[in-house]
Length: 340
Ligand code: SF4
Image (cartoon, rainbow, N blue to C red; front, top):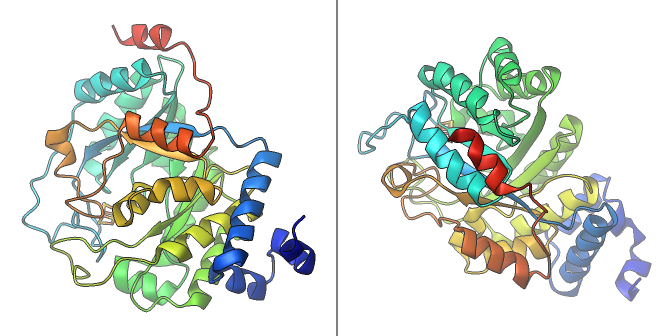
């Protein structure tokens, strides 16, 4: 234990508002001690091996109107697409051929893709891979159907714990979002959630509340992502979210959720080269590799037209630079043969 930790043992249990608030803004030696404690917590929990996910962005239709996202329907510049099952299965085969065992299906909130997604899940699950979804707010019955089809986890970020800010920026009630998060857990899926750091009107207190809300939800995965201004959105002229605040939030989450999967999101790399490595060094343990074919990917401007696209090479180089290793995977040849 270093001198800092002896002086402030509370560092390892930041359960009080004041502790979380102080750690969110710490810098210099104090910040390095925070990151060191987060890495120690990750190692003690047996969560050092970095989880790789392969994401397929299957539709950029969306009902919602989030002010930070170019996929919102008001953006008439956006060319819309919705993949079919065969396209999704062809991309899935590429993912499993790389030995990645979590297929991550992501889209805007697009009810017209629900039936197709169910069919895709059933067929993906013919092989021994996990299916993670990020498809927005659905009915409890729809979440239950995803489980019946074989999905095992779902990401639904609350974005901000401030109900007024959420309503203003997302256009729907936060309470609805949280109800969906509980349905996801009720029907038996693991829940991933998290916030965006850098939204207009957000305060340090809001960010503390975000972490406390995550604690209430008890998610299996938790994330903090920096805000990135996106072209053709109401927030396009705002500055980017604070990298250091985001890294501190990741580290605090690691201390509070030692067994969680915590991503070093691609937005970190977008705002600073090496940002995802900084995320791993702050306690993260997930990298998501983008397998969406370029023609579709260019139309999936969830945080920027010029977003950073994570390749397999970049992921492996980042993991090696962090002194970590990827999680062991199943026999990829055996898995891919299921789609032939
Ligand atoms: S952030 Fe998600 S829900 Fe909001 S507009 Fe974009 S794709 Fe739709």
